Length: 519
Image: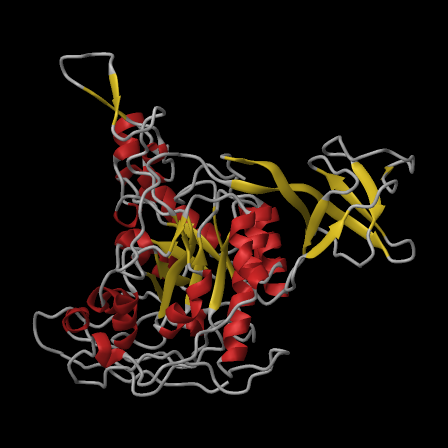
């Protein structure tokens, strides 16, 4: 790979100004030389003061070379982390038992982090740990201790919101990259540059931005500052997730990872002089879900977001199942592969044909910021076309109605005011334990009923799902006895399968009745 140099943005040296802080770069990453990493740099850039950073764009005359866009998957436990890696994630983000923004998942012990990081690195992936709560005074000492522990377990980056924690992490865990959480509400290049000066290797942009805003930030920030954008999953009705509803109504703080999700509850109006009489806000006898935001799905528009300068594509869902992680990660990784091939960066085997680059013009050093159309590369790039099976994958996991978030102002995200649950059109009926090629039989752990004539799909990494009609008379239980159907969950069975399937592949089938339940 070639290496680019980010030039000095300016120096002040004037009395009264904040002295320059040398930012951390990917040079300090523990697995810097791993070829699968999404970005590399080999020279620490010289920087201007924080005051200058906020006042003017920091521009690079040479492009920072990235291998390809990163697919960043969620994991609420060790199994989900390994599943994400197996299904193509370039990086996985997860939280510990404290100081993360999700308390509902099982989350990770320090031993889990160590094992997960080892597994990820063996497969060319990375692990990021969330430390993005807004800590109270009585939590700062414990957070310092926790940062020191994370520095020793082999993870690659910390996701932070609080500036104090960010500065503590620089001293306590200097070899870990610092990624600034979406909770920080980064909406402009001035904020991104200031955070870069403070040591951030990456900023996770506020979900409220459109594509033009993403492009403007990319055009006016250092090329070795990663730009991470959400592409899929739940959206919060509050700005960048900074909500007080849960704390006010239940005493459970969303800013400490314990959100009760009152935005998903049913609401009625009560008139002051008619206590106990409830009036639906809309014409639905079940009430109305006033704040129930649609989910994001940018799968069919990834080319627009990558072209706008996003370097990491983030899937939301640390509280989701391993199956959800597998299906969505597989779809987005396949979409990025299609982008790289159709844009001529790679061939069909993943070999590099030319260096990857987005379609954003950079502001020359010392010049006014390029914004809007001025930041666009001239000409139009062809739309990346995805196979239909890839576009179908988001509809085979539990989901609310989809939108493209705020990326396209003409089609903004809305609310599902008439329901609060998830659609679930497909269910997981089993998981592959092994495949015997000599007998062409698959051994599985059951989760739901499977019977003769049923259409099932095997979800496997990096390929279209294998579809099969279950043959009659082929079910055997764990002792080898014939059974009419698979009808006991958490039991071992086997059945004929004409094609090889991989261990841990999910077996799914269309639900008989569409449900409104979480996966």
